[in-house]
Length: 158
Image (cartoon, rainbow, N blue to C red; front, side, top):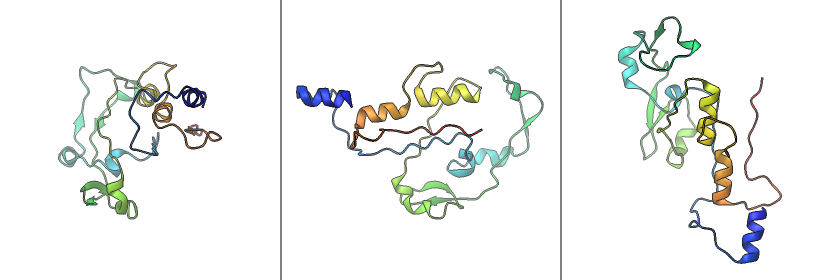
């Protein structure tokens, strides 16, 4: 808010072009359904279903102990919208707006621990102190209402 007031008073334009987007809804559902069961079917899992796998040469965690197996999704998928987005058949109403959704499939992090990886996804860093993606979107798009927060983070429920 202070940045907007200062910019308005000085008459300076932002250092980046005006965004085409007016809003951004970013749902990061920690503990939500797996991407493999919702929007990202893996054909290779059909072939590898219930075959054992070993992680060799990678960072290990306590969850890596014992035998591990590939497991395919128990759900059926379909192509939705003109874009042909892969979507679980259980998403009946969501399929109608498939062309209005953005499916980001380029996420990679270096940590094998979920809390560190989650922080890295949302801030771009594995260590504390960096602004979250909501702060960057707010910085880029601004706000239409100075009386409401530009973004909200809901805490994890225990």
